[in-house]
Length: 231
Image (cartoon, rainbow, N blue to C red; front, side, top):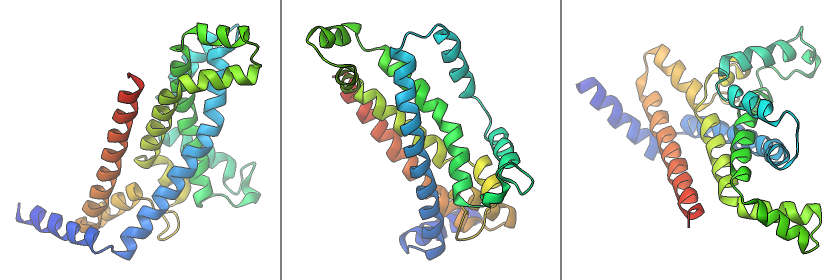
């Protein structure tokens, strides 16, 4: 008990002292997570709208596949991407392996189905009369899409927040594609795993506190968005 108390106390001091190593790890995590979420949103939001609003013959099958991809293990994605960007892979000449870009690629693959599935759910809940009314008033396809997006804006925000929360806490992709290189590809989760293996718990606990704080902030923001969406 004394060991845990001492480690927890030291971890809190490390956080409030703004330790350079801790800040570097947090910065890398936030950078790759934010970029991954941005790219996945750019891909997933239009795709989700097209699936939900379009007249596709295999729509039910596509949605089923999307929901199945939500359970795809991160290590499977890491292994898949690794096969393409390793030196013997198709894109080996690009030297992407063990870089932040490699982590971003893997994380985009991880959360794009999540964003898409949540956007499909958000768009599907919008009353069809909004689109019909817009068309009746002479709105173009783009203007009709804007109307639908405006009505689904809270669901879209919730999808993006959920995607960010998914990647900020993942470890498999970051470890396999980033290599856990200090000051370059070491994220909060991979650093915590390394410190645990070394038997050094102070930095691991400090990073855990930061990660829990970020996760709590994301959940609070998610609940606020959902609450406003019900008004």
